[in-house]
Length: 397
Image (cartoon, rainbow, N blue to C red):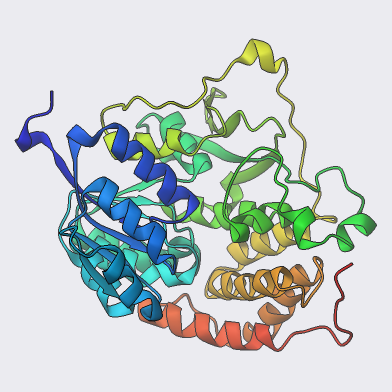
């Protein structure tokens, strides 16, 4: 039994998303350990209200201000305070708690996550844009606040565990694995004709739309390389990617003596989330156990940078340094949204990113010194990317 003094206070940013849902599930299963300060969602007021009531949260905040009254109505009489809008999210994120799940997707998650970082505590980071869009500035904020940053992405969490507390100076390479997505075996011509519904059919993971499209293009793996660079303070030349369709091995660490350790687990986000939620203790999860005998084999292959140019662009942005990763991320978010809206084709995603990089990086491009600088560059990159529509409009078929 956990004593009141041992209970942890928690806030969930992005509670209505896929990572948020897995987090809510774990908190409910270990309700005796946690007191929920706040839950934050995007625009689904009804779903957010249900989560807040189930967790006994003190407050619930919906990002879409037009949904504020709906949230208040859904929470009437529950004792849960309701609010809406960007300012309310920042206020909720800034309330001191022991642990925060940072899972607001996209660059929109940057400011709330920084607000959480600045008051210290443990940050479970699922919002990769914090490190991709503003890596150096974000890590400086973490250092200044003395916050503990724990990665939630299955790959980075696996690398953290495989590292085993040893120095990165002893590491020769860190390798992220990729499932290869739904187009791993498709020809370049077939990929070019892919529709949103094709790209959303991920073979092993259940995720939100944007990250699923990123997985299909392999941009997701490129963004994760940039994340790993900042998380582990490791050079781009010591980071690698392998395609591993079974999604059992999530990350490998090769040490300078030749030893290799690997982080394995089922394709269930509750496993890495539980690692951060209970850290340094282990929490029980209902995730299916990895049955290697039933799996039979583990295969690996090098990524194809011709069929998946998005990964090449991300590698180049990481090597370029400066503002390249910020521009890459912003342009990709715009391009993915256009593809999901059927306004561009699948291969227009890397084209838009590459053209935006070319237009913005011809000028001096130092890395953003502050989070505010990163957000300003993000806005400019989005504007330019939005203008990079194809001459002939794409037609879904």
